[in-house]
Amino acid sequence: MITTTDLTKVYRSRGREVTALAGVDLHVRPGEVYGVVGTSGAGKSTLIRCVNMLERPTSGTVTVDGAELTALSGGENRAGRELREARRRIGMVFQHFNLLSSRTVQQNVELPLEIIGLDRTQRRRKAAELLDLVGLGDKARSYPNQLSGGQKQRVGIARALAGDPKVLLSDEATSALDPETTRSILKLLRDLNQQLGLTVLLITHEMDVIKSVCDSAALMRGGRVVESGELTDLLAKPGSELARELFPLSEFGTGHAGSTVLEITFQGDTSAQPFVSQLARTYQIDINILGAAVETIAGRMVGRMRVELPGGHQDNVVPIGYLREQGLQVDVLGAVDGAVA
Amino acid sequence: MTWDEMWALMGPATQETFQMVGVSAVFTVLLGLPLGILLVLTDKGGLLANRAVNKGIGFVVNLARSVPFIILMIALISFTRWLVGTSIGWQAATVPLTIGAIPFFARLVETSVREVDGGLVEAVQSMGAGTWTIVRKTLLPEALPGIVASITTTVITLIGYSAMAGTVGGGGLGTLAVNYGYQRFETAFMWAIVAELVIIVTAVQLIGDFAVRRLSHRGRTGGRTRLFGRGPAGPAAGDKDLVAS
Image 1 (cartoon, rainbow over the protein chains, first blue to last red):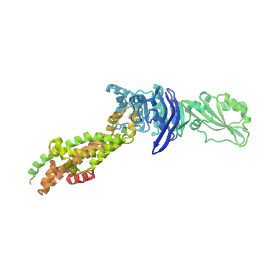
Image 2 (cartoon, each protein chain N blue to C red):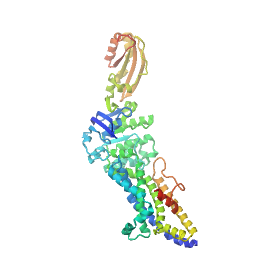
Image 3 (cartoon, rainbow over the protein chains, first blue to last red):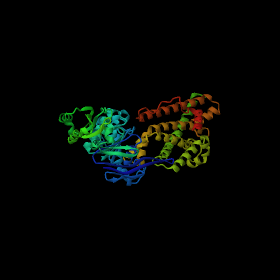
Image 4 (cartoon, chains in turn red, brown):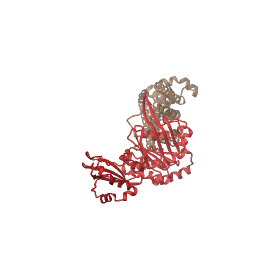
């Protein structure tokens, strides 16, 4: 649905060059929620603004819903007619909402419809529908300054959906909101994604956002995507940086000398199996649980447990094999203190 | 001089001042508003960024603003005569008043439009709007409270200028104050005129502030009531304002 190939963006000011994007390949499939995460300055904001050409990339291509936007004429501020029409099919929500203070909630939602050229009655009907959809049907006549942050973002979302877009871009949409409001906005995005089949590309600096709504994610650093994929695959991938960020266990204990520490990740059905007690019974070993956590990621139950088995790695090859047979992902963190690895 | 005599003179003069200021204000807004918007649009990073045009307009505006109004009025005499057929009377005074106020107003408009959050422009761009739509549906409505406040300030400045126009035959309250107060030493009459100007200026400011408050839907109310803090009240203050502008 959204594809970028070898996207670069270089800013030039007073002879100095700053590379914001250094060759980004992104592939967002139709109907998924795709999250790009990274610290500020990683280039994620530039990336999302390049998708609808609010920033024109220095090189590379952007394709949205089959249309190659980089091929359409017009600069950042002087978009050509074709680019303007393509933008109408891409909704965008912003960190600071960007609602017009001079217009009521309803008039704000009607604005994109005015640009499209719908007549008054159609605009009203559509705006009322959208406001009901985001749960603000009773606020149509309010002005944005009379609303809370969460309500403003709901208006922003309703406005972004006015042109019946297939793609919604979310530029840190929840970063200015408190945790509870963030949750309700993310839930709304997830609902819209499921009800309308909307493809969502969002950028955020919060791992929690990725964890709670995204199907896929990309980690950006220094203008590059360092890791990307579906969350369920990432979690199953040994040594995945994103998985570790999503699911940190580092504060748990690291075990005793002469033992083997395993990190066991389980997803979906496997979480229902009592594998710890099965393991202990089958092999007659004492298992020390160092730490465990269960979370819902991408709509699935995912758990991770750090356990300590007595003896070195070689002593535990059979139990580890048993666990892997059960469909569990097992990472051996290493035998502690000089034991043979 | 009796009150009745004063009233008989002040009535028509007040009407002339209103006509002079009203007509000038209308033309100032009609011509200064696009100029102010153009100053923002053509600036670096603007929607119609064009260095040459921006510098050109900026230069003309600064040039016009640095000419003292009384000199501008005299310099424009032949132009005024060509345009309205005379260089005497309130109709003639509207020409230099308008030309003097346009650059002043354009700068005020520029400031108001610049205050519109760039994020809003971006949001409307992302909806697929072109430059004209952005100006009409975003920049103007969002800057409207500021523009109305600018109109208020401009009208008050015009009242000050109009009194000055009165000294060279422009008519209105200025002429009255010079002819009677200055040349005939009717000090009481002059103070009466000053008092009237104070009332007019105060009323304009109050109406303007009220309008700004009604239009502004931002967090804070836009206009504060400024009764004493600013504003040329009468010809003396008008002089000062002219130097400042």
